Picture 1 (cartoon, helix red, strand yellow):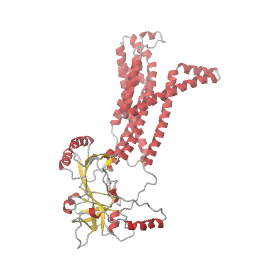
Picture 2 (cartoon, helix red, strand yellow):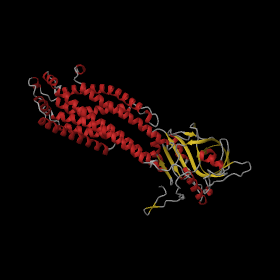
Picture 3 (cartoon, rainbow, N blue to C red):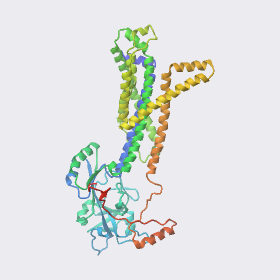
Picture 4 (cartoon, helix red, strand yellow):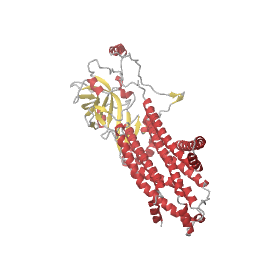
Length: 564
C-alpha cells in the first residue's frame, strides 16, 4: 500500500516540491562536503610536506631505538636525520682530514667577489635511506632524487659557489671523502632558523660513524620522522609521550608550523561556513516544502481516517513515504553533488597549487544522513500535525488539525543546532550561524510584511489591493519565503566577503618588503666593502646586525624549563 501511494503521489506531483528541496539540500551538502574533504586533504598533505613527514620527534640527543622499532611494528614508515654545523673542504691529495668545525663558526661566507674558499662552514644533514617521507627531494634542474647513498653527498648552490666545484668533485667531510652527485634545489623540511642560512651538505647517516664528526660537545639536532595512517600515528604518539626525555618534543604540522596551522584553520572554517549556510538554506526550503506537502495531503489523511486507519497507521504511512522520498533524493542528490563539485574543481583547476586528491563516498553518506535528519526535523512537526486530521474534514473542508506542535518545533530547533554543530565541529561557529540565520529570517520577514502593508496603502487599483490582501492572509508563508530568499542572498554575499578576507589575511602574513636574500658571516673589516657594493648597484645601504647564539633562560623573570 505504501508503495502504491508513493507511486501515485509521485506521478501526481505531490512530492515534487519536497523531493526537489531535499535533493537540492543533499546535492549542496555532498558537493560542499566533497570539496571540503579534497581541499583539506590537499592542504594537509602540502603542509605535511613542510615537515617531510606526518609526525616528527625532535631531540637534542640521539633518539633511543625502541621508539623507532615500535613505530615500524605498527606499520609506520620511519626516517631519521641528524643536522649539525661542520667545516667542509675540497679534497686534495695530500690534505689532512677535517674534524668537526664548531670552532670555525666565524668563517666568512660572503665570497661573491673573491676566490672560492678552500674550507667553509656548512650545515651537514645526515639522512636515512627513506628520507623524505612526505614531499620531494629535488635537484636544481627540478628532477626528483633520493637520499644520497654511502660515500655520496648532495650540496646546495651556495656551497657549490663557495667551494667553486662541480658535480663529481670530492669533498672532505670529517674523516671521510664524499663524492658530490647532485646540486640540491628543494628540501621539503628545510628549517627556518639560523642553520637554514648556512649552505647545505646532505649525506647518508650510515656514513656518520666513520666520519668522526660526532663527539662530545657536538651540537646535533636529531629528528625521527614518521608517516602512515592516522590511527597508527595516534597510537604510537600515545605510547611515546610517557617515554619522552629531556630535550625531546613531538611535532605535527600544527605544532611545528603555527602559521600553517592558522592558514588551515581559516580555510577549514571558511569551508565549514559554506556547509552551514547550505544546511540552513536547506532547512528553510524543507520547512516550506513540508508545509505545502501537509496542505495538499489533508484530504488524503481524512479519507484514510474515514476508512478506519488509526492515527499511528497514518503516521507509519507518511513516514514510509518520506523514507522513500529520502532514498530517491539521496541517489539523485548524490549524482548532482558529484557533478557540481567536479565542475567546480575543473573551473578552479588553474588556481589550485596542485591537483586535488580523489574524493571518497563519505561526504555523500554524511549528506544523505544529514538530509534525513533535516527531513525528520523540518517535516516532522508538519507530519505529526497532519496525522491529527479528523475524519470530519471529508464533510467540512475548513477543518484543519488542531494539534499543538510547539514542543515538536522546540525539538526541531535543538536537532538543527546539533546538526549545525556536527557540520562545524565548533560550537561557537554553530551558534553564531544559527543565531544569524534566525535574526536574518526575522528581519527579512518583518520588513517584507511592513513593505506589503505600505504597498497596500500606496498602490492604486482594486486588482493590486486584492492581490496584496491575499498575500496578507498568508503572511507567515510570505515572511518565510522572503526570509529564505534574503538568506540565500546573504549567504552568497557573506561567503564572498569571507573569501576576500581570508585571502587578504594570508597575504598580510608576509609584508611586501620582507627580505628574501641574506648575507651572513660578514666580518667587521668587510662591512664597508659590502655597503659599497650596494651603492654601486643603486641600492640603499643595508643595516648590518650581529647574529650570535644565545640561551633563553627566563620569560618575564620566570625561569624557562629546558623542555620548552
